[in-house]
Length: 327
Image (cartoon, rainbow, N blue to C red; front, side):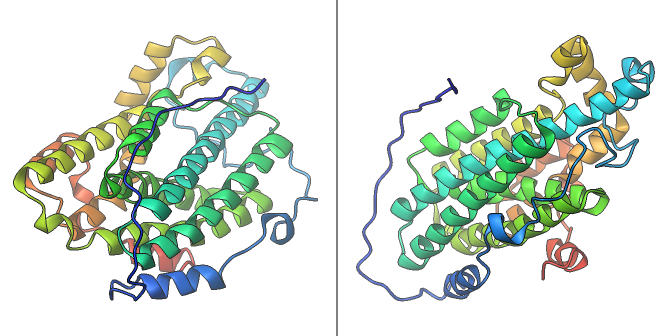
């Protein structure tokens, strides 16, 4: 029997009797979302054969390459490791998309204006489609689905549980979706398997709108919060960024699979220059969006500097989207 993970949630549901667009740009975003719906069962070529131990990602792309036990693996063991790493990563994408579906459905109820509710409804459909296609690829092509990382579950649980609608935006639309966009983009650029490459491109086109949804919705709102409430948001963001950056060092499930010590593997990932660079790059959308929202306060800046993430504050996500053909 599949595990059922239940958490208690409570938040205010807001009926809105004023149906007009508030001029945040969400009406245009909603129109784009309607125009760009797609069917994962129709628009992806699932008839394509995929060998899960083939070179789906380039050899040498592993973040574990400098870990001493990896150097001792033979060719067959390296293929097995690459298969496991990809299954682990795509499984985390799958679990994250389910979390995004739940949060988007909550925003349909909790968002305090109508154009946000309408857009959240389209995002809920997007996320359901993403769950569908990632599950199908992981289950049918990789044949190796892995459980959610405990830290990722903690971030999702906290975002879903929180009663404040803007914390749901910050946790999901800004942090989790922003990190996902960077991860999808990095994988898309090096992926050598056509079905996965097309899947990632279609998902990224949706996710680009989802991040924009968060930025447009929160723009100006946080500036008017009392000092104590702004500090609460700062605390949440610092915690979410610390958790997210360091959880990427765990390679949850890989150590057990390969017979390695988890702490040794984690330490190697945390100390590896390649790993630090790749994990840091996942924040290349988050940090500039925090700056746009006025959330790079002295406290947040200090925390991000300690995490070696502040260099991304002048990064231009729109330029990267154009390079990937998303805009």
